[in-house]
Image (cartoon, rainbow, N blue to C red; front, side, top):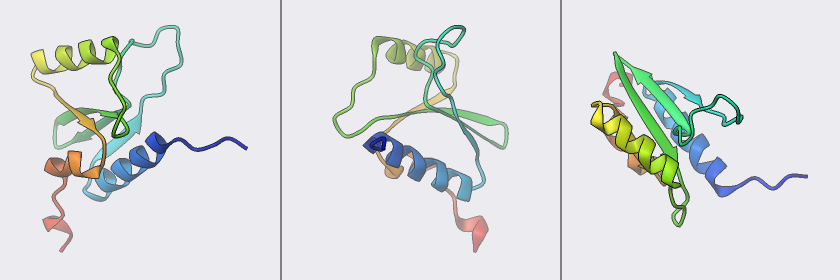
Length: 99
C-alpha cells in the first residue's frame, strides 16, 4: 500500500477550498516528455483570472525550474502562489456569495 505524502493532503485542502469558492481547479500532472518543466501543481480559473499554485510542505523547496516558471508567470502579469496551507490561498477565497 502506497503511503500518501503530506503534499497530497495540502493539495486536496487547497483544491477543496478553491472549488467551494467557485474556482475551476485542476492538477497539472507531470508526465515527462512534452510537459513544461517547472509547471505549477495547480491551475485555478475564475472570472477571467488564472492563478498557478505550487504546493509544498512547510520544509519543501522549489526546484530551479519551478522558480523560473514562477518568474515567467509574474513577468507576464499572471498570479503565482507558493502554497504550504490553505491560508496561502486565502486571498482567492470569497465566501460572502455563499451566505
